Figure: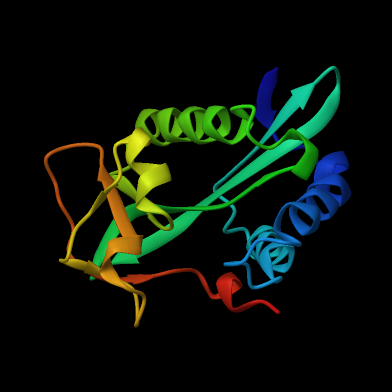
Length: 164
């Protein structure tokens, strides 16, 4: 498997892949593909990686800038998409790990997400009651600091997350 930045020719495949990956997910809003497109169109898709297997795209992960309270230099992880028939093979994990490494190399302060703590704790994400997001239960709001600086406050995602 090869992980690389998205290219313009990948956009349609990423859209189709994201729709398929979230089609039957109980937590999905069915706007995940529109979110990725909106972030890209706004120039707010800081990091967009695809995983290829035998030359075919099998997964995608997006990272975009967020603020935590008034703190900048943080990024939001998601969406993460893998073709349904390829899920459970570690593709999403590889994309996430690779993306987090790139964010560290960029000098980012850290990353936040809304997701299942049982899954995301393997990457070092923790629940921190000082980091919130609307009325989402606090155990699903997670952060991963890359240094000593720990942000606190409400996460503000890019307006692209309002896409529908």
